[in-house]
Image (cartoon, rainbow, N blue to C red):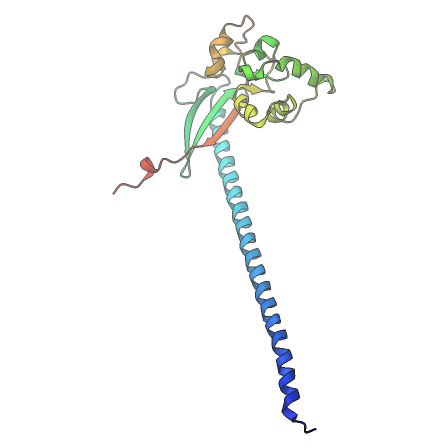
Length: 225
């Protein structure tokens, strides 16, 4: 049988071609995978940067509010150039960001650990039974123990995130006695607090501060033509 020298080489080329294509496809798929992972990583990093920037903005605004409150005498709520310490909102403009600020003297709030039942009863109806919940919670804790924040205490008392957000402006765990000063209480409970026989007219040196970034109104924020 006569042999043709070039036939073996053509056969080898035919076998090598699919292997080469497979390698190219593999490299292409790996490049696409790396590209998609790179885009995902970039999005994650951008999100972290945005949250970090927002945290710094909030921390800066909080320091400004603290300095403003420190310039007033403890319990002084009459001076018109200073915010009222009864939860009344005021606006703070800082570095182009508008914040709604509420500062409340802790003596005008309901103390989650110290307030007697009649003061706890000032809370909205969704907090009904909080006195019994508190008694059960404290029973399992060493005397004097407190959770680090009001949010954690409310969670331990069985309130979900939505209820905690609604109750947060009304409560503290830093009051002196647990009684309440109606003059410093938030508007929603001020009238009821004033009817309590044991109202505490004192004011402290500590305020709960609530900061919320205000939404920008695209109409009023638009540049004039």
